[in-house]
Length: 334
Image 1 (cartoon, rainbow, N blue to C red):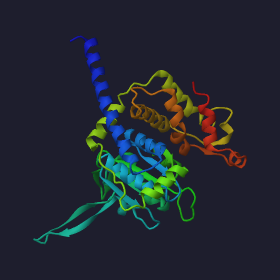
Image 2 (cartoon, rainbow, N blue to C red; image 1 turned 180 degrees about the vertical axis):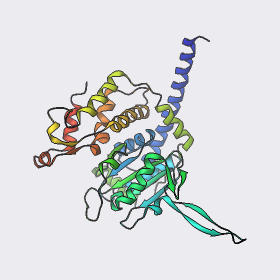
Image 3 (cartoon, one colour; image 1 turned 180 degrees about the horizontal axis):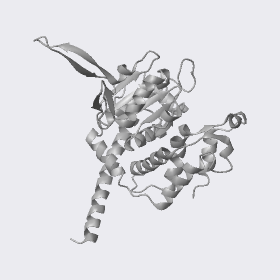
Image 4 (cartoon, helix red, strand yellow; image 1 turned 30 degrees about the vertical axis):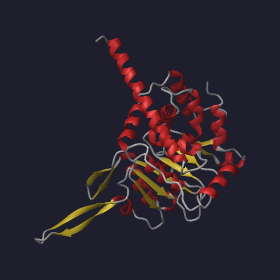
């Protein structure tokens, strides 16, 4: 078989795999929508985060179905899901696990590792900023390295492994804001807003009746990992690569866009570009396309970059916002 025929056969296989993945993801979105009402953009961004193989920071006031979203996604995507409620007295061992001393029948003693709740495929870290920096670091290190080390022994986390952490943007008393280096571990920040009137009416009627909708599995974890591998094989055009590179570099103080350089305390590093590259591929696949476009870059620039940029005190005093600066940079794409 010639090289041309082999390449054509490979391309046809990728197309067939992509069509199957798009159908599976479409069923997953529909299944999530039967339980989580009116948050289509939030659901899409959460799916993009998972498909990109990363972690998401879900920001919203209490009562906007953040917990229900994560729980529903775990069921729909066939992932083992666990939840940790972060509190100031939570210790790293409460998340990672610990070793206990056991005595066998013959009197022989040995240590046995008891896994913590982090050993799940989808972990909800509820109100992550309420835990101490030490506990936050234990989780976020595991998010980056995909294993934990206890008493010198390495324990690998399940695959796939994803964290969706929630944060309340209003109540800041008694919280420990995530440091910049830890925020960078999240592929994107997913902002959850209030529902519109029609959606809230549906919530009132359907969640207070005798029977309520329950989520059903639409994918398995193996199918999800296959879709994640496929996503990384999607081609990315030079114009999209250049747009991502220019966008990330222009959002930095010093050598970035001169019109905003003085407004920035710090900006996105190379991991932001990696996250955006994966996210635009995932968005394209979710929407049934085999290659990302400049529209994907524009749509995902804010959720991917928002938590990776900080303004100077002077810029904040003048009323500047991170979102406005990102929109200014996005307007120059293309």
